[in-house]
Length: 177
Image 1 (cartoon, helix red, strand yellow):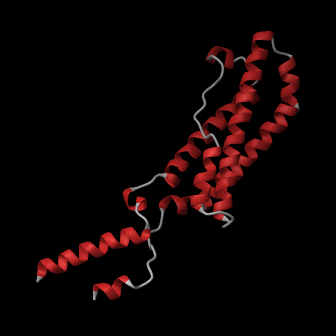
Image 2: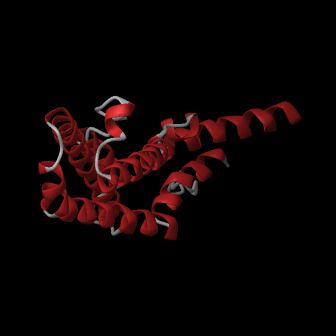
Image 3: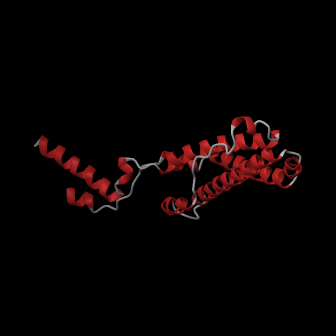
């Protein structure tokens, strides 16, 4: 009987919480927020931000340049990750392919480039964009851990996991006899 069971096609019925989360309405809202923040920051830095930076004293202007560069880098990392996840959600790539590709996206924690007293002298809009990008970064890094965390059950391939279950069943029936 065990031989017949093992001849059935093996497929995993396990649903990944991370995958469900990444394809949920929550992810769609996160994607919209992230891309909106990218557009908002680009518009500010190319427009009003450029004007505001010219009004700063030299040391604050250097801090502005550092913060805006770090903001841009952070947002590009986050946008790359969001686009990668959207590709998975839309079936353009598998989660395995995304896991391989996401290593090219350096999703790392970044703090402020400036000391807090200098940062507080920077234009309010820049500070607001930086704080919002830091909060988004934390949320995305958390989601990344949830999606790509490997649990012991996920570490086994579907056929290997099935074999483990079959062996447990066989052992249970042997002990009953």
